[in-house]
Figure (tube, rainbow, N blue to C red):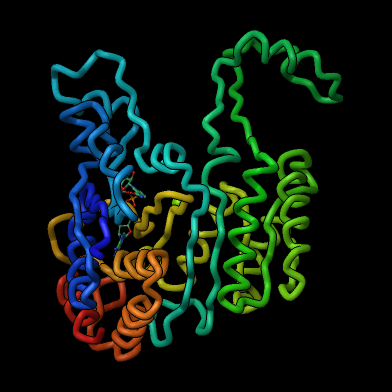
Length: 371
Ligand code: NAI
Ligand code: MG
């Protein structure tokens, strides 16, 4: 039966890289109905909402979604670019992808980082790690105050800390962003990471945290992840402070297998790891919940390249591969990945970021030709 896939190209290079992914999916013979959904800057400009209700309704009815990229801009500019009738109405721009993650409880951010042999951009050959980043909580909980409300500033100035600057500050003189990690949230991302390790025969999970300093929230994350780990005795478990992990990842990337991290540390380490395996043209990710999963290249809309058929579509094509895996099509996923790996290894077709001059479409055709 045909899968229902929401197709959300978005802005800038989003449509180009998704078309490239589509070319490959069609060549694979993936049986799907693709339904277009509007998202991004144009929706904001014309409707005052980058994630319109019709797109949310669409996402309630699909098996998965592919998302290209969106443009976002600072608040002042966002307001100025609104169509005239929408200006001055107090509309506030909020990232549609962050909203999607929270609205559909897409609590897993899955980011595989594989150095395909022969990629001239590999930091080291042989890197093959997978990041499980918690995707809804932590500093992204969206609980922020500036100025601090009276009740909160009262609590803060009552704290008998040796260093308590809040006693002397007015509430508008400081800002507070809450890092909130729950036991349930930590448990489900840990379980996802260990289940994945078990299913894929991965040997080790590294829990990333800063529990020696951020004792309450990271302490809970670490403690919970360790409890979950106990049910997977065949998998080696270690933990690392996030700063040390960043250093060790660069020094010895081959020592890492599965990384498990709260939201912010996972975000930062994902970019380091993506760069080690080729950069933005290769970074793909899945935002996965129990009912919906949204797959995307991790890059943005790269406005300066929009419409030039120039950027690397491999990130979007690998996002399609992740979608196939998620939808229970491992054989197609494998064919797709092998095709990507062969094109990279042969080195005959390369986009500008890989030192070549082939177009987005030529790269997509080369990969499609090998599936
Ligand atoms: P970006 O990822 O769009 O581009 C940065 C640079 O990376 C580009 O100028 C280009 O040199 C390179 N690049 C990106 N994708 C590439 C590809 N597929 N192949 C080859 N090279 C590639 O990040 P930037 O410039 O910071 O942001 C541009 C817009 O995208 C902003 O409005 C930003 O808010 C938005 N953005 C959206 C994201 C999303 O939709 N998930 C993520 C990051 C940024
Ligand atoms: Mg990021």
